[in-house]
Amino acid sequence: MTSPEPTPDATTNSSAGDRARPPGTKTTADVPTGLPADLIITRCTALVHDDHEQIGFVEDATIVVRGGRIESVSTGPIDVDVPAAEHTVRIDAGGQIAMPGLVNCHTHAPMVTLRGIAEDLPIEEWFNDFVWPIESNLQEKDVELGARLACAEMIRGGVTCFADHYFSMDTVAAVTAESGMRANLGQAFFSSQGAEGRERSLDFALRYRDTADGRITTSLAPHAPYTVEDADLAATAQLAREHGLLVHIHASENRDQADTSIARHGRTPIEVLADAGLLDTDLLIAHGTGIMERDLPVLGRATGRIAVASAPRGYLKFAWPTTTPVRALRELGIPVGLATDGAASNSSLDVWESMALTALVQKFTESDPRWLTSRQALHHATLQSARAVGLGEEIGSLAPGRRADIILVDVSGPHTQPVHDLAATLVHSARSGDVRTTIVDGRVIMRDRELLTLDVPAIVREMNERMPALIDRSHGKRIQDYDT
Image (tube, rainbow, N blue to C red; front, top):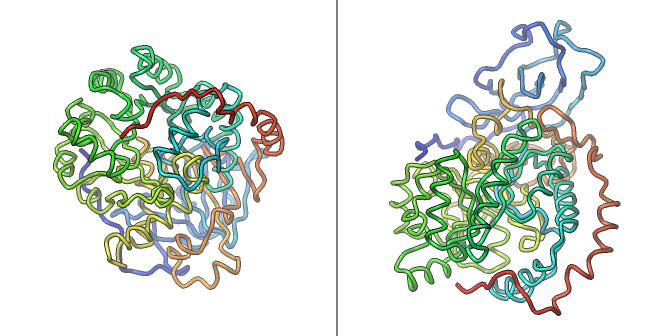
């Protein structure tokens, strides 16, 4: 179990004039001579975390990147002694905010092909009448095109890393590598597939772990306790321990699922996971809006690194009566990352919107305007999300030694001015469209809103040609039955 982490400042406002020095920050004089810098960003305001993980901002900052990692975050203009070369990329980010790239902690990227196909429906009709019949038509090409479009959408929205749980994941891995993004990928399986489904998930995880120059990590991906039997869950836990793999699973997605599980099995979905040994592995639980009071001590006794991914827009669309209990989970030291779920349910892969909605929904459900604050929301969008996908030591903050996953956000628009509280401006006024530049591992994959690795018009043209065959439901088949 993770230890409780310090709560970001819930009271102090941050204006554009707030100054903070991140732990380990180097001045330009500290930068060692040697290999030239790969990337130098100047004149930005950098969002940083201090020694207590509280959010602060460094004005007139310079960020130096070498070998895909942040070498320094310093104040003032860069010294001419910092080695550079012809290949060095220089970005003048005057008037822009440099932030850690956002992480989409749970999605089904290829499902953008089904955006808007089933609206204004309860979840059982959404699954049984539309999504699972259509998914029985899926071909690898559909998965490829969906993944390409999803990566383009996420890059433009400042998402540098995503955790994906879907089918034909070899194809998604290839698209991820080409797009330049970072991802944790898992091949989903159901017990209805027999042992072969679980074996394919393991095979994928082992073949693709730490590929794409380390940008792709992997997980085992049982679908959910209501589609994966206890024996398969226990076998998955054993495989996770043997191979040191994260497990990514839907569980207690909503209160109806929890109530049905108790009625049928005498246990909540969280208790099912505990009995299978999954709470003693590194575990990412998708949604968790059905987590009950009785589940909290169960989670508190977990010995694995447990995290929850929350995607509030989908819960609002499905009219679920409860949301992810962020405050209770935080008190247990369980990171809560931000997510969108798939675009078939959410209609969007906009993590920026998830950040704002998380803050607003938590205020509403807790009846407390002081929770969740803008600074806390930024903490969930950065370090907590990085921890949720098992990358808490690599990404999530702008600090020396971290991978250089950086976004530059323009707050000069009329909807973000004037700036009295920069944290609040970023969470409640800025939009994903304000992201100007997206950088992963020190490589610029979008600059000044121009995508550099993906051709959206070509993707959309080919996708639309394939759409009639994909959405045909006349065959009457479905890949599963939703019965919770």
